[in-house]
Structures are given as structure tokens and as C-alpha cells.
Amino acid sequence: MIIGIDDTDSIDGMCTTYLLAVLIGKLNAFGHLKDYPLLVRLNPNIKYKTRGNAALAMDIELNDRNASQKVRDLVIDIVERMAVLSEENTNPGIVFIENSTDSMKNDLSKFSMGAVRDVLEIREAMEILNRHDISHKGFKNERGLIGALAAAGFALCGLPDHTYELIAYREQKNWGSSREIDPGSVYAADAATHPDTWDTVDIENQRIVFAPHSPDPILFGIRGNSEEAVRRAFSMIKSEPVERYVVYKTNQNTDMHLIKAKIHEVKEDRSYILEGIVGKSPKTIIGGHIIFKLSENDTSIECIAFEPTKGFRRIIRELRAGDEVKVFGSVKDRTLNLEKIKIDRLNMQELRNPMCCDKRMKSMGKEQGYRCEKCGAIKQEQELETLQRKISAGFYEVPPCARRHLSKPLARFPLRQEGA
Ligand SMILES: [Zn+2]
Image 1 (spheres, rainbow, N blue to C red):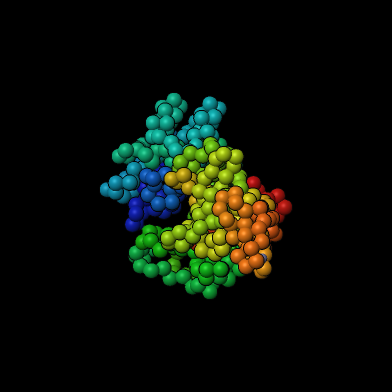
Image 2 (image 1 turned 60 degrees about the vertical axis):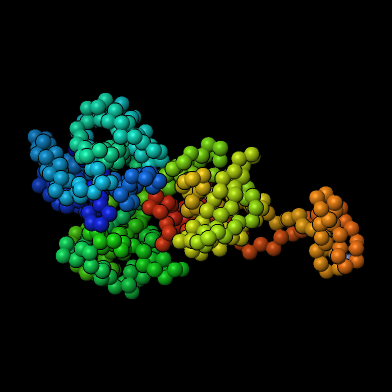
């Protein structure tokens, strides 16, 4: 039986992954998990999400098929008791898949991918649930059925790419207090397991990034390429007691949200890989964000590196008109929020006013030519000059402290095949 659950989070307490961790413990009496539980990150731009827009699923082999009603009741009961139903944006959904058909798999593989890349309606989830007679339970406005069905779909059809996250949970008496984690052990665990693990610490910004600061039950999460790697890092970390931990298989850090497209095809609230030419030199705007225009034929889009992307902005600030780049990120308000950039070719030449007497000549007006203020010499045209560039072509990413859940770190790209 596949069980999908979504949207039991609240702003200041419960987290769906903890609910699943508790549930896994209770379901031990009824059967065993056929694979890792799945932690699925859905479209990061959905405005209704509570926090990280995570949905969960697990595939349990029941010892006794007659137990299925009991298991469904148990799951519904736990969600009713643990989800913070009083919160406006908490609208849980639960889905149970017991028998699958090819046509169900067909519908679900499309639907699940849509929940990561697109903006889906509750109605679309209901249509599939009804068409295939899938047992489900929605609470309040039932929005959680979208994520629950999407996660169950991935459990049924598989993830095209995946990583692992080991999430350790706190003892309940410690929830809300500050986390006790020995920083030295965290840096040591990172040093011993990177690049098979990532986003445990942010070396450049000297920060530990694998532990949240919110009052939820999560102590920390270790992300990596294999169960072995995340377990090895876990074994090295010294901290307050861990109540329980779960190793999830996940679509985090896979770039699954990104759609390769042309600039004119871009829609709001989706995430893209776009190719184009930098318009003008980037501008720094209020708040320390940096923006530039990316153009392709007659269409263009603004790209932005927000202040929290820290040192990444040093690269963006050095872009110049004519540079050929690929950008990776989510689009909101016709602006792409940069997660990565691949600089394919730097423009090494620029048209500038001619030099004379050790100074730039002055323009005498539109199409009027250029004049030296010292000796009065006149030239008609600007001249091509070689640009001194401070950056090189290559692939650049935001630091771990600013990485979004779905964004694939460069450490996961094979060395020679550069991804996009
Ligand atoms: Zn002169």
C-alpha cells in the first residue's frame, strides 16, 4: 500500500516529515517499508505552501491484506491528531494506493511532475482520484490532496533522479528551545563526507546551514548522494539527544523543477533554464540585489541575484553586455530569481569613444562624431576595445546558505558533462 501525505505543516510547530516519522514507527506492527520513504519537494513558487512545500509518501508491504482498513484508519487518526488544523494554510490530504493499473501510472507520472513544475488545481487531483477510484481523505479545503497524490505518484512511478536526506528529530521537551549542536563536529562531518554530502555548512559564509532555526521538531538534516554518506556524516555529529531519525529518498537537489525553455515561453511561478545574451551591465538596486536584462532575439527578461546570495553577486556584478549565458531559477513578476548561472562566452570587446591626448574624446551629439577637448581632433566612429574581465567562463551557483531545496548543487554535476 502506498500512502501519500501532504500539508500538515504549520508555521510554528508541526512538520509533515515528523508526522511521517512517527507514523513509520506505528506502522511497523502492520508490515515493512518496501523502499525508503519519499520526501518530495513541489513547485517552490506556490503561494499556498506552508513552508518548504514538501509532500511525503511511503510504500508499505502489509503482513495481512485485511489490515488495510485498519492502516487507513490509523493514518487518518494520526493526521487528525498531529496536524495543526486550526491554521488557515494547513489543509491536509492523504492518499492510499493499493492496486495500480497502467493507465493510473500514466496519469500519475504526468500529474506528479506537474506538481513540481506547474501550478495545479485541487480539481485536477480530484479528477484523477475519482477516475481511478483511489482511496483518499482531504481536510478543510483539501489542497493537500495535490501533494499527497503527487508524492504517492512518485512512489508508484519512481523519481527520475534522487538524493537522500537523513533528518534527525528532537525530543519533544526541547522543541522551541535553541538547538544544542557542537559546531566543530559539524564542520568535521562535512569535511569528511563532502562532496557526497552537501549543504551541511557554508564554508565561505562561515555558517552551519543544516539545522533550522524555527521551533519545529527537526534537529538537523544531512543531504547527500547515498545513504552511506549521510549516515557517516550523522555518526560524526555531536548534539543534544536525537529522538528518532529517518533516511528519506528525495527529489531535493535534482533541478527537477527546471524547464528548458525560450524566454518568450516563460510563465509566472514556474522555474526555468533560459539561454540568452546579457543586455547592459548589471545594476545594484536598493537592498543590495543585482539585476540584469537577458535577451534572446526580440524578447527579454530581468534576472536578479538577491542580497542573501552573498558572494554569488560578485560574479553577477561582473557580467557585461554581450556575454552569452544560461540562467537557472524561478520566475516571479517577470523576473528570474537566479539559482545558478553558466557563462558560456564572455564578451571581450566593447565599443567605446576613441582616445586622444590620453583622454576619451567627447561625443558631439547623436551621429555627430567625437571630439578631443584638448587638441580639437575629430573622429566619426566609436572604436572596438578589448575588455579586461575579472571573471572567467564557467558554472557558478549561490552559496549553501541561499540554496533552494530543489536546486542541484554543482557538486552533483559530472565534471565534464556540464549539465545544461
Ligand atoms: Zn587630442
